[in-house]
Structure formats: C-alpha cells, structure tokens
Amino acid sequence: MAHTSPTIWFLTGSQSLYGEETLRQVAEQSRAVMEDLSSGYTGPASLEWKPVVLDADSIRRVMMEASADDSCIGVITWMHTFSPAKMWIAGLEALRKPLLHLHTQANQALPWASIDMDFMNLNQAAHGDREYAHILTRMAKARKIVVGHPGDPIVQSRVSDWAFAAHGWMTSQTLKLARFGDNMRYVAVTDGDKVSAQTHFGLSVESLGVNALVDEVATVSDAEGEKLATDYEALYDVAPELQAGGERRESLVYGAKIEIALRRILESGGYRAFTSNFEDLGALRQLPGLAVQRLMADGYGFGGEGDWKTSALLAIMKSMAPAGGATSFMEDYTYHFGPGTPKVLGAHMLEVCPSLTAGTPRIEVHPLGIGGKEDPVRMVFTADPAEARVVCLVDLGDRFRLVSNEVTIVEPTEDLPKLPVARAVWEPRPSLAQSAESWMLAGGSHHTVLSAAVSRETLEDFARISGTELVTIDADTTGSRFAQELTWSDAYYRGSARR
Image 1 (cartoon, rainbow, N blue to C red):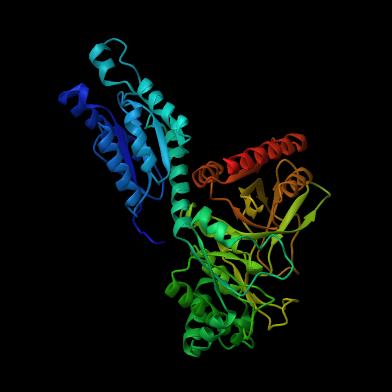
Image 2 (tube, helix red, strand yellow):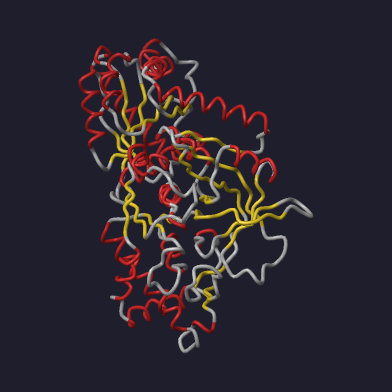
C-alpha cells in the first residue's frame, strides 16, 4: 500500500453562538463519543479527532485539508448541537474523500428525572443531524448514514465496514496494475476500456511484455531459487518428487525463480496487481502458478488470461478484508446439478489463493493440458466452508457494473482425487438455477473474486463511494424482480450520464 498508517478524521459540528462553556462541553463529549466508537471499531484506519468546527471557513479549510492529506482515507461527521447546514456547503463541495454521517449523541439514555433546558441546549444532535442531512441530500452528496449510540456493537461494526470500503477506495485510487502480455484472444469480458477505468476508479493499467518477466527470471540464480524452494518445504506439504533430491526438484526451483522475478518487478514498479496469459508466455517454461498463489496470499491482485478488471477488483477487495481474510481469484468452472443440492465447482488452471483455507496446502506438479509448456507447480487444496460472496466487475460500455452473488462454501460432495488444483465448492443463493440466470442477465463475467472476508455492507459502501452500479443476487432474488431491478438501474445510470 502507498500509505502504511491510514487515518479517518472525526469532525464535529456546532456553532459559536452557544458560548465558550457549552462549546468546551461539546469538545469533551465529542472526544468521548469517538473513544466510545473506537472501543469496538475494527477498521483498517485509526480514528483521528479534530477540533469542533464552528463556521463555514473552518469547515471549508478542514475539508480541504482532509482531501489533500494522503493518509486520510475518509471523514466521519457528527452534528453535536445545531450546526446550520448552509455553513457546510463550501466544505462539502471541497471534500474529495469518502464521507460517513454518524447520527448519534453523547448519552445513551435520557436522564428523565434531571433533564432540563441546559441539557436540551447542549444535546441537540437529534435535529442538528437532520438539518445537516438535508443539505447532503440536496447536494446529492454520496455518504453512509449510521444511527445509534457509539458504544453499540452494531454501530461500531457498520462504521468498521465503511472504513474497509474507504480503504478499498484509497487502494483503487493509487493502484498500479502490470499486464504481462495481452488478454486471451477473442474473449469479450476480460477486455474493456482502461482509460474509463482510470477515470472512474483511479487505477492505472500498464502493459509489460512477457519478455520483461522472462528476462528477470533469467537473472535469478539457482541458489536463490533453491533457497526459496527450501522455504516452501518448511511452509507447505511438498510432494516427495519436488523435495530436495527428488526427481522433479528442478520444477519447484524454477517455479521459485518465477516468484522471485515477479516480486522484483512488482515491487520496483510499485504494482499491487498483475495479470498473465497462458497464450502469451514467451520463453517462460511454466505458466506461473505457485508464484501467483503466494503473491495473492500477500495481498496482490491477479487475473488470468489478461483479465485486468478482476485483478484490480481482487487487489481492492484484498485491501477491504481483515488481514489474511479469505479472498481469491476464482472462476465458475462446472456444475453439480444433483443428486442433492446443486453446487458450483470453482477453480482455475492453477491460480487460487491459499487464504481460502486454514489448512496446509500441498505443492504438486502436474501437466496442464493447455499452453504447450512444462508441467507447472501449484498448491492443491479445498476451500474451507464459509458464508461468502462471488463478485465481478464488468465493463458495459457506458459504465462499470459490480455483480455479487451470496453463496455458501461447502465441502465437496465427494473426494476429488484426480483434480490436482486448488478449488472451492459453493451453493449459490437463492439456487444455482436462479443465481446463474440472474448473473447472466446482469452480464456477469466467468472470472470473479470469491471472498468470505469482505462483508456485503462493505461492498455496498464501496459501490456508493466509487459511484459504481452494484446488483446483488441473494436469497430473496426472483427472476422477475431482478429483471425489473436491472431495467430501473439501467434507466438511472443512463439518465445520470446525460446530466
């Protein structure tokens, strides 16, 4: 990441007419509210309290400062007392960071026996926040609203979800992606408008010839490759033929050299995502498999066949997941229609992230069957059962669309002894038939990000922050209603583009 210590600014609104003593109490209670919120907050950025703002100039200045501060990934606002909303117009116009409106108050319960006009004068958030919310709506300012006491775990969780989304937006704004070769020939969904993507999301997609990777692999010494291969033996269950002295040890060493070379290129270029393409490997002896899996586990985005949109989405969603959270590149590969509950078998040729399992993956070497290269090394494992979602990002020509399907990752119905790849089996909601019908109607891609770590609310928050259409397929989805939702959504976004 570009910034190792992200912050979220906590701003409190009031006005000078309340007098010095009241404003001192406002500041004290504002700090206390932020401390209450922080006690159960689990987001990726620290909450940073800022002095109470009292007039249009101070509001404008602090919003400009937040927008210019690279470490600030978002702003939380709360109107402790009554802060006339016209004071906020210039500041809100200047704000270029994600915004959360916290509708709260310092006290959880009313002091029924002692409440007086002094208390009422100090505690006015119930109508102060409504005044502020009015101007946000009138200005069509995208924001998240969270209502409740700051010590409430639900409030803390919802603010945390938004903070992860804001972190994802920061990642998107600074993301550089390296494409080794082009995308797979004749494939529509992996292509797209990279200029529009940079305009919309901020991410930069940069082309590197596959020979750049070939040349870098050639600079990695046998000793360096052997050292990393030895590290693999300490971390994973390595097949005997790949262990030191095994008959196919050299395949593992070469796979390690690919990883070393990839890391050098990505780190030196500041890239946090990349793609490869089995149709365009140049003089590489293997399709990168093990290297890709380990890089994804370290938070890098990846897309196969040159799929830069899924690679970028994976990098963004990795940054929106708690550290090490189960999130991976994935592909809907084949179905189990029955007997029993219909299921999807998801996999890819080699590239599935080991964050999907708490177990120890096994490193093996097997033929690939396509690409015409040497047998590649890869981790083999099955994803752990979990509630999850598969998400894709598609370019519809006039806009980008996120499509999400709520799923349950399950154990395979039977063993898969002849499928030596990393894989996941899931039951999509509301059913395989309805989810697939809805997914295809929405134009969803066959490449996805599978995540058991990024919450639905975080994904919704990211869509709102980025101004991206999001359609969700869940247990309540029906064919007629989903088709209607797409029609309405299409009308809205096309109308927005004309304005």
